[in-house]
Each structure stands twice: as C-alpha cells, then as structure tokens.
Image 1 (tube, rainbow, N blue to C red):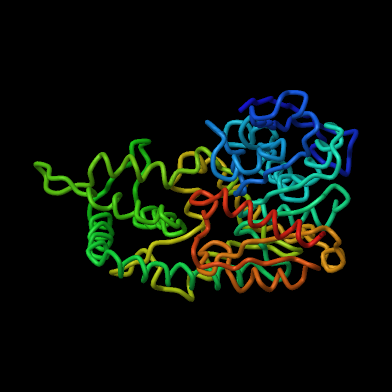
Image 2 (image 1 turned 90 degrees about the vertical axis):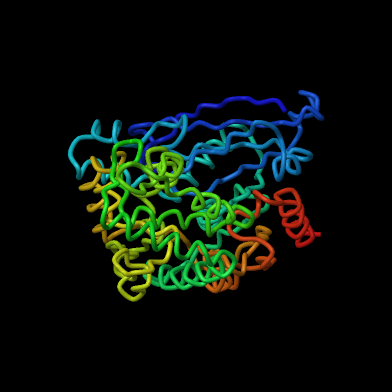
Length: 421
C-alpha cells in the first residue's frame, strides 16, 4: 500500500467559522495495485471508527475490509477531533482551556455533529465528489448524523454494529445492553464453568487484599469487571479465558494476582489512550436532556452487576463516575466529567424528517447478540431511515469486521449498490 498524511485546519465551532481552529489528521491508504495516476481517479471512502474517542485505525498492511475496499477506493482514515494526531483533548491539554467549566464547554464541540462537519470540510478541501462512508460502531452513529445534516456529501453509507437509537434517554440504551451483557455472561460461563469460580475468587481476593496495577493505580472489583470487554468479541471472547487462566501466583505471603495478569488487566481498564471515551460516552445518547450517569442509575435495576455481590457479572461498555476516581488518566478530569453529565441542553444529533426522506443508499449489518449496540434498538432505527437495507446475523458479534471484514464489507457494498441499480 501507499499512504499519504493529511492535516486539515477546521473551526472548533463550525457555527463560528471565523473563530478558533483545531487540527484534524487523516491518513490516506491506496493499494499498490493502482498506479499513482489511477489512484487519483478512484472515488473516496471515509472510514469512521468506533469510539467515541478512538483514533483512526493504523493499518500495517491492507487486509480484511481494507483490502476489499482498496480494490475500488482511496481510503481516508480519520483521527476524529481530539484523538491521535488531531489536536488532542486529554488530561494534559484540557487544563490549557482554563476552568473546569471552560474545559466542559470546549468538549461540547467533540460530538458526532462536529465530526461530521469536519468530514464535510475535509471532503470539500480534497475536491472530492460525494463519497462513500463506512461506519463501525460509533462510526455508524456518526454516519446517521451525516445523513441527517449533510446528505449532499454522501454517495452511499455502510454501517456495521452502529445503528444508534434516534430518540429517548440514555437509560433505555443501558436497560437493553445490561440484559444483553448478562446473557453473554451466562453463555460464556456455560462454555468455561471453571471461570465462574475464578472470577468469584478474584473478586473475593480484591475485597480482602489490596492489589495495584503496574501504573500504580488500584485494581478494585469494579475495575476488574471491565475485563468483560472481551464478551463483545466474536472469536476474541476466548481471550478472556486465557486472561483468567494464570490470574494467581504463589508468593511467601500467599496467593496474589500475577504480574502477567495485572499487566494485561491494566491495558484493558485504563483510558489513558482514549480519555474521550469516558468523558463523552454518555453524551452520544444525549438529545436535549442530561444523561446524569445513566449507566449508574440503571445498574440499580441489575444488582447482579454490583461489585459487592458474591458472584458479580462482568460488564460491558458502561461508564461510571468512579472511572474518574480510580484511573490516573481520568482523575484530573473528574469535575469536567460531572459537568458534562449534568448538561441538559445537548443539541439533537439526528433529523428524523430528513432520515425518513433520505435518498442516500444505506446498508447496515445488525448483530443479533451485540452487547454494545442493542439489536432491537437498531432495528427500530432501521425502520426510521428510508430505504435502509438490513443484514441481521448471529454469526458475528460487535467486532465482526475484525473476523471477516472483507466479506462483510463486500456484502454491504453490494446491498447498497443493488439498491440504486
């Protein structure tokens, strides 16, 4: 492959184009099967990755969906504002904005509406015709915002595991996903019954014995429960068993958690690499009302996930206030997170009338047992978008494109193209 790096200056607030600007980075990928001259004639495909707060994928080579897409497209991989090589937003840079309130106000410009406005500004700068966009997970949420506010920039839209709920409070999202995660726990412990006792043993141990991760932060029961992120994987789910199998080691003071285990857990529970995920996560469901730590509220209806029960279940993507007490990368931003949770005037992220009337071809993969983006809410959204083609499958989980991205991409592109034939 050949790559080209692009840096774009865009308004912090697109409603004030003459005001402050930030940098947004994107990397272009082109297959060497195309000459440089041929590549200039290829249409663009913009990939919108999961998140919020995740930088664009770094391809070591063209494989999976990237290999499939590069046959016919120039791929643009965006570092969404605040991530990667774009102007960063983290514990180091945010205090430069001033007070906690100033920092929170700054972050109100880091949701899907601003990401879409960045993308349209970039498309115009590149001189690109309406382009194809491919949204995975949160990238699909952004794609729906794109369809709502800038459909003129779109040729076709492909979405995997990312049909966001268009209305309603964040609470109903977590009511649905807590149930999905509980079912996935049951399925997993059915495969590995010995791991049920290992999880219980680790939880008991952490209540009785302080353990510290390699970054010096505490490993609590609630942080340990975050290893449930493995449950959202298709083949990756078995990695949870490999993590748990060497959790303990013998020491002169009795059994302790092994360095191998603690190092792996550190990588799973820290948000040092993507602080915006924790800061902005519930805001992606905010539509005119405060989210107010919705996952924590809904947890009260699902006591099987509480860290103080004898056999706690492992958790999914939920974000809780204690993240900002126990993670060194987030602790300085604790007050900022609280202000964002209290914000009760979030702008709408979707235009229901425009979605109901869109003429842009849209094809989406909906994963039946997805623990992050609920199947029922996804199908509700699909019915609200004119002409949206759904492929529902139980063969994959949320990270399906990591397992068979080439086939999934090809299927969705074919569905979208067939819609316009």
